[in-house]
Image (cartoon, rainbow, N blue to C red; front, side):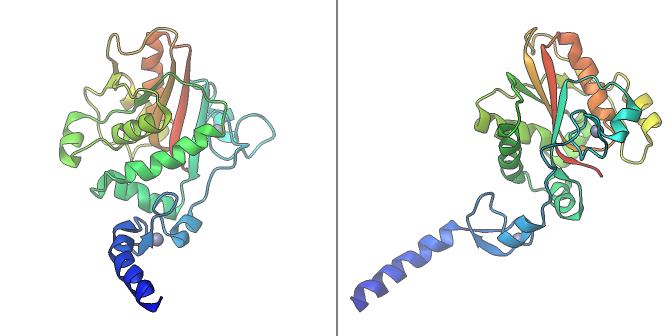
Length: 239
Ligand SMILES: [Zn+2]
Ligand SMILES: [Zn+2]
């Protein structure tokens, strides 16, 4: 019996090694769990509650259907919006690794959380459209994180991921205020003819919802395809 136990333990050791993955949050070796985050890092993530603002997907700080920021912004060119995480330091670290840290495999982790969020909502969609990055940024980074997220989400939901938008030009967005962003974003996207069937329900995806300027420009361009609806899904909503 003792021998058998020893033998089984010896056999189990390499199998256990194969099943262990470094946690993308802290690098610690962890048995495979839900999304390969160790329990400590998983515990640091803060999710947007399900009774969120319907226009940006963030926390609703008011008594209406939308938050005070959306109330001030006015009508958005989409029908509904959802966001998975509150954009705090824990998820910010993971998203930065995903976007700039050469960690494309994090698409799988994020897609798992995004699919779980979608499953809890009434969101119905026929196709997934990722926000494109311009050619030079893509070249420098080696990948577009939104396209990878879209591909993983497509595998989980069974809906196709469509490169319906291109980005012929575009400057660096992160240090501009909302008015400057909106001006710079005008005509930033081009709809690729024939990629979206008229009457289709579109899920437009991006990593972080900040002011919504990028998504506004993209959704406005997508409207030219006459979709039945546009739903926005972002990984995190900046607080
Ligand atoms: Zn960890
Ligand atoms: Zn809002």
